[in-house]
Length: 542
Ligand code: N01
Image (cartoon, rainbow, N blue to C red):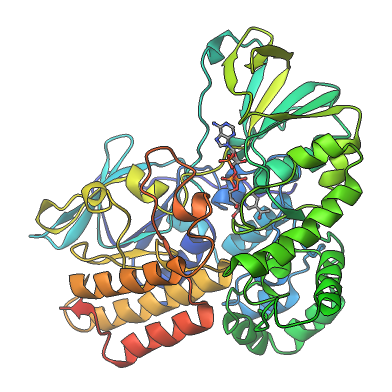
């Protein structure tokens, strides 16, 4: 990895710093917000991040096998058209190190790091009504004041890793996938347990199975997995972007999920069994979870009948791949194919390996650690390493970690106790001049191009505010109507009734609720542009 190290800011005294804009987080969204505020609007901006480098989730998630499972083509920024045209992704699904290299290259080209304070945690953000400023407090007690606050704190960045009893007794190593050590511990020949079989778990499992001495997969809920289709970056797409990057970007944004394909409009039940099988077969051969779920048919995540056609097909592949029928049965989900779709090459085949054991930890609970390993269903498994691939407090987690106080002492944690409330996924009522990049109730899409779109949207809003008083707030009624649109949208899908981070069900005690605009990016842009064209209806610019 040629990851450029972040340069420390020399001589910038944080305490008492006065800014136009403060940005929290320099992942994909925050980095572009920094560019937009500094270069497009010419404002005095400083960004803050707990990490020692740019990248957000790609800075922390360095676990074996980590890569995007979105086409690299849409995992890019488009604001720098020269880079968009010429960046050379080596693979169709970029590895984590390549994504991080890319983000460093963007930051370096535009000299963004000079406006970032790394290793800086923001613990509190409070609106000072008299001064019309956000007052931020760092983990070291310094205060920074800014007229605008942008939080780009990440959708899947707030790590969730439950502790099992007696962890302190364990003589081996416990590693959290989403906080993987930079020195990348060598797992060769070791006895390793992976807890969790979501996107993270399946990437780790397929990456390390052949390398470790013995791999114990601790599966609580099996999930449907299709191939990813790892391979070189497709030349036809490269040519298309090179020829007209703006047209490519606009094409991608005008799809439903911005994953680099056009979603199907055909019902799985509207075609013959032969046609359906052929379409699934082609999607399986191509790879990509989102494509399998959304490019094949329109209603896999909408009706139980259509969903069953997809799961029957995946089940036939699973049964063909896994030699032991008992293991195949353990790997077979009993719920809908309506979580965030998973994709990994050779996942089911891993379970034919003699050095891999699958454990059902729903039936046989993970009880506790011992000196030598974990006790599962009363039996001790000897281990050198336990890898927690147990996910994230998604969507709202990082916002709620910061103590955020709005107008009249309104406390964000209280306001969101039954679920988040936003307008367009970007603002809230009573929290003036506060913008989120991909906040709750953003569209359910791939991210970088959508982050750019949202940042551009509120850049225009801030520009409008700058000419008329500099305060943007949101009408509570507008928030409620946006939340209702989003709740109704999720209610019409199987995502609503299938436990996962999409609806908050993965975190004990978290309100189970909608957190997405499910109408697709094309419709989202129509809705938000209509709001803009109506003089930013629902926003209060003073
Ligand atoms: O997290 P998850 P993730 N005991 O929540 C299990 C993105 N991402 O980090 O299903 C035992 O999906 C839990 O079991 P269950 C992507 O959007 C992208 O894998 O709750 N097990 C589940 O199996 C993705 O969807 C990429 O019963 C426990 C697993 O841990 C999102 O991040 C790569 C447990 C968590 O699965 C989250 O994925 C990685 C316990 N106490 C991530 N607690 C790519 O782009 C939880 N589990 C490829």
